[in-house]
Length: 268
Image (cartoon, rainbow, N blue to C red; front, top):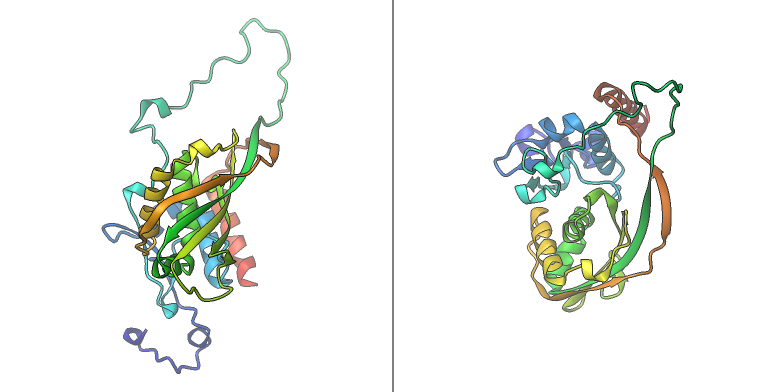
């Protein structure tokens, strides 16, 4: 801030409120700005990242924006962050060809079908992770902790990270933020996964989960050492829902919607 000519005692509102944002919140290992990469295809993520900062909403993902007034540091995105199989890397990921849906000799009038529905099963559970007091403090107080843990779980059970929700984080049985830690700690993570099949305990391989948690924690700037294999508990599946499969609108429409959302978030 001092390099820009500002002082901590300034009367400027954005200085007093500690709200000075830069767009280098997520960068590559070579310091490339993710703002000029994934944001082009996902402007909705930029809106969510902005809402995370403006409203101090930890339920929104940390993306693109970082608050230098609060000394936030960039999150480095590495190749290990990518959990999707790309067609250019794996031929089995190519989309299936669309065959003829109506024979040439058919005299029936075409009908309009509604959107296809897929069955989604919601699974919930908890993970208990042993680590030192210092590591538990560093991980639990990190704004990106939920996102990092969600990615670690997603990698372990091979689902998209967007299908994993971290419901709560506890340290020694107390929800994060309730009190200070007193000794070596157990971090408990309550999670939820929406997938085509119920998540079984066997899918949560403890060794793989331990490695993934440590890797994803490091990716958000926290080096933790897990001192015992994570304990995994999977609750009974909550039930099934049918979600329609919709076609994404054109990028230009998304941009318009995103800018309107930004105006609403800012109260304009």
